[in-house]
Amino acid sequence: MGYLHPRVQGAACFKPEIRIKTKIYSAFADLNSRSSEIFRHIVEIYLETGEPVGSRNVSRHLPTALSPASVRNVMSDLEMLGLIQAPHTSAGRMPTDLGLRFFVDAMLEIGGLSNEEQAEIAVQVQRAGLANGELPNNEDILAEASSMLSGLSHGAGVVLASKVNRVLRHIEFVRLEASRALAILVGEDGSVENRVITLPAGLPSSALVEASNYLNAHIKGKTVSELVAFLENLKKRQKTDLDELTHKVVEAGLASWARDEEGRPKTLIVRGRANLLDDVNAIADIERIQVLFDDLEKKADIIQLLDLADDAEGVRIFIGSENKLFSLSGSSLVLSPYRDEAQNIVGVLGVIGPTRLNYARVVPVVDYTAKLVSRILT
Image 1 (cartoon, one colour):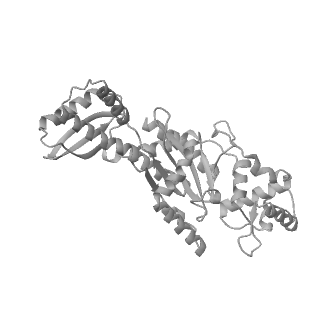
Image 2: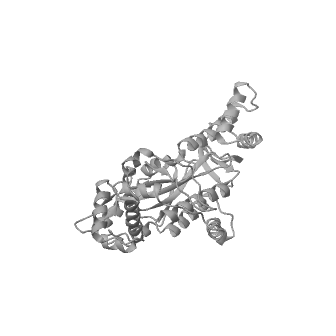
């Protein structure tokens, strides 16, 4: 499973909710300072290079002199604990998924973004649509956020837009032919959606105007579901002023949107997939990335995973085999939810990358971007 990151540092640091799973670390309680220092260097060198780390390389990075032979002894102990592994017959070692989890939660110190970095992210996310002199819509903003996350992380930026039970501004019915009409819904956020509905036989055009006027008289400040409930209540109290045919138009229009609001598949936006192919040389790595690309095409499965972030107040980190979806692709996922004006979670955004992501950099970027998107969308 994923965890909220528990270690922070600095005056303007990233501050997620702390969630420490002590059972995971019980086997590591007896690590002495030397073992911890060697393990930390192995992970840091691996995250920087992506290559297995040898004892001679580690000994050169240690603050105190220690022979490669002594380092090898410690590495053997770390391997017994399941923190590191040998990917092949070479003498080098690399962290396991469990080792990366231990490092991320217990050793990694994450600072905040500078004011300049925050301003740069804000400009990039909000520039959507400005090139054409238009106000950006929500999807433009989310796509720009995904592209920005991809560029800063050198991974794939991913944004999941959940269904948004939007507040309504205007509804109109336009006849297309004798038996069909176009139902147009405009949200307070500027979004416009059209649905084709079937009209009752013998309906006059004036009834469409009456249905539009009736709905717009009751629409202010309501979502589709709230408007449906309100009109149902009026109907029960027999306070509707509509004749039978016009009432059928109203019900048909609202039913089409209500079904859409409840059953709409969530939108998945992924940018920067090509970044995942950088520095890939081995056949096994190419196959791993292909599995990841296949996963990205199965949007329903991705959405199930991203929904796990719905319970989080801050950033959640999934590393390799901690989740079923990416266990075969050897990838990590860093996610944070974004919210609407009522502080309801309406989506999540983050970064997909190799398990050797620069977590210290990616975590505060994802956290700030989620908060920024929340502000923009409200």
